[in-house]
Length: 263
Image 1 (cartoon, helix red, strand yellow):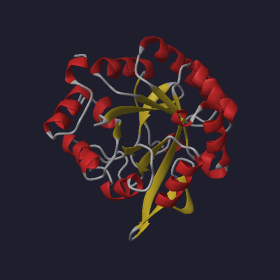
Image 2 (cartoon, one colour; image 1 turned 180 degrees about the vertical axis):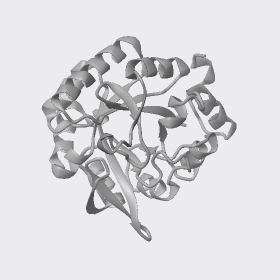
Image 3 (cartoon, one colour; image 1 turned 60 degrees about the vertical axis):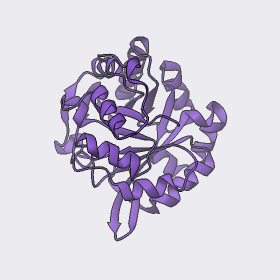
């Protein structure tokens, strides 16, 4: 049986890791600095993280240069796979990040604007490198709407339908972000996670809402996710990656063997 992955996420703004609630933004005072991205990545690598996700939320030329530097320094010190997203608008942007040391590229708004970017990236670098991140918000009963531009713009698209299209275009993984649950620590949205997981033939990573260990077990079991992504519970020292994995193992959820974890 394939093991389930535990993935810390770092939102990087001007070279620093930040954290918001329900997609709070820097210009609204909705972000809080929580540390240096490379130092945090090294910490999670030692704790046994299966992967690390970096989201560049700066959206500027300076920010892009800072992110390249972050990825280069992290790749030099960590052995876990690295995923990078934010501001990736062309195949050339993907190539830049992969050359810096990233293993996967995550695209979101750019994929919505230009779906063929998914296919182009998959053709150039392989589907295993292309992750499509979907920001979904429940806007009416039984309907989760895809949002773009950091959750600011409603698209009218059904989240499940968009996930299926992304998969058909060549995405090798889907990251499903719940805007409603993001940063609330009230639990993942298992309903939409399960629907997406049952609709695509690639791994689905659940994101948004982790507040305790049971939340992670729940979305892996009931939500049928292949991996859990979290930020706040790791950044503020509530839990370590190793503690998460130990708890998942007690629930019968397969994780990377404990003896490979570092203290």
